[in-house]
Image (cartoon, rainbow, N blue to C red; front, side, top):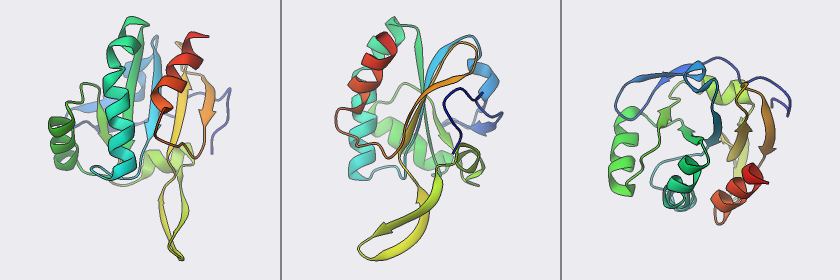
Length: 152
């Protein structure tokens, strides 16, 4: 996993509308990059819903939100439409960005091991430096925690 103080790795992947988004598009802006395992699952729905609920507060503070998962553009489009998500969800289908950030790793569920996204969040300053990392995020209350950490 990358560390606090590191620069955000360069990437370019598609959003829910198929538009290519680059990490450099957010240079000069404070932003949240959160990785989540899968659209329409309970934890991911909770997390997306809370970030959506607080989105205006993030915007008012000049903070962008970016969600990234291995789901494809079509899945993200449906998820954005159903959940009224206004911030970009990026389709990391090849898991390259997840690997760059170190969040693609072994997981365990009901005694079974498999590879997947470890739910994690990265807070990034205007210079593109990561100043806070939340590994293994619990979705409920996370949006408020992130906003509080940005504002304090």
